[in-house]
Length: 114
Image (cartoon, rainbow, N blue to C red; front, side, top):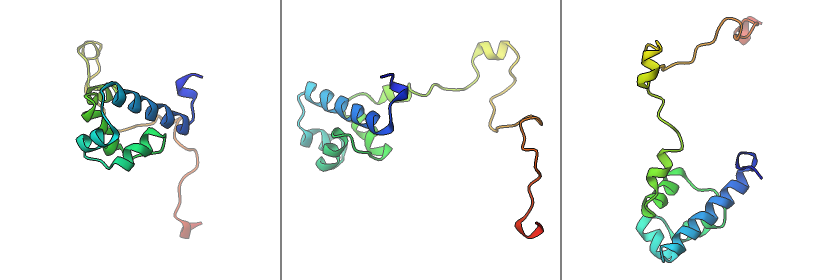
């Protein structure tokens, strides 16, 4: 199955298996990796079995496994590239703006005014 079509649960299971495989490949016990990452052993057990975890916990595990750089590569930096500047893009956007055709046609009113 294509990765982007997986459910959240199956993605968590895949990530847990990969963490477990990396831990074993690095010859670390769950207790050793948990201590290195500053998380509880039971938390690591749950992650390896496919349960959800806080993002900070996941980052700590990746850091302990030497993979935190890979995480930052998942979402590319959106700063203006030199090519974008040459093509006339003026500056980095900080807000979303919609054209008039994309805006809702109904006017919003307060509940009391209805």
